[in-house]
Image 1 (tube, one colour):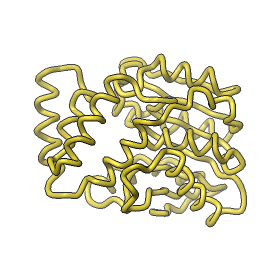
Image 2 (tube, rainbow, N blue to C red):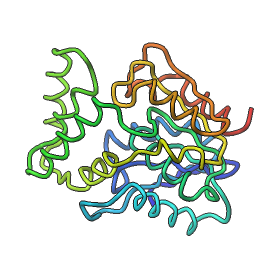
Image 3 (cartoon, rainbow, N blue to C red):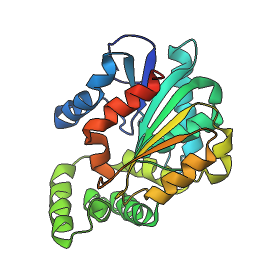
Image 4 (cartoon, rainbow, N blue to C red):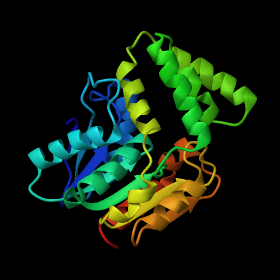
Length: 246
C-alpha cells in the first residue's frame, strides 16, 4: 500500500508496478497524472511488495492487491490500471470481482503483444544478469531507429545502479499472463483507453479484451503510442466521466 492522495467522493485505487512510493521525477509525473482524479476521489496508489519470489505469478500479485483493498476499504472500489498495472487490474477483477466497482484500463490488454513480449524478455534477461535493463525496452517505445538509439541511451542512464530484480519479477509475471478465456468473469463496468499506435499492447488486442468483457467500452486515441496515451489531455477526462457514471 502506498501513496494516498486526498480528494472527495468514494475511493479510487491506482495500481502501479513500483515497489515503493516514487520520488523525484517519477513522483512529479505520478502527481501530475492523478491530480485530476483527486478533485472527485480519494486516490490510493497500490504498490507491489518488494522481494517477491522470481516465479511470482500475476494471480499472486493480484492477491496482494486484493489483500490491501480488503484491509483498507469496507466495500468495492474503483480501479485504474495502466500498462502492466492494467494487467494486474484485469487479473484482480477476474479473481476478486467483489472488490471492483468500476474498472478503467489504459494502454493494456488481456495479454502482451509480440513486440512487448520480446522487449520484456530482453529486459528480464538483462536484469537477471546484472546489466542495466531499460535499454531493452526501446523497441516498444518507437519504431524509429534513431529514436530507439536515443531511448536506449536515456534508459541506460536512468537505470543507474538500482536493483531491478523486482521489476524483472513483475514483467516475468506479465509474460505468463493471458486472460483471454476469463474475460467474461469480469463483472465491473469497464472502460479501456488505448492509443492506436501502441506497440506493447496493439489496438486489436485491446479490441479483443473489450469484446470479451461484458458491456465493456473501448476508446481509441488516433496517433497515440503506448506512453502518450496516458499523457493525452483526454485521458483523465474520459476516465473521470466513466468513473462518475456520466
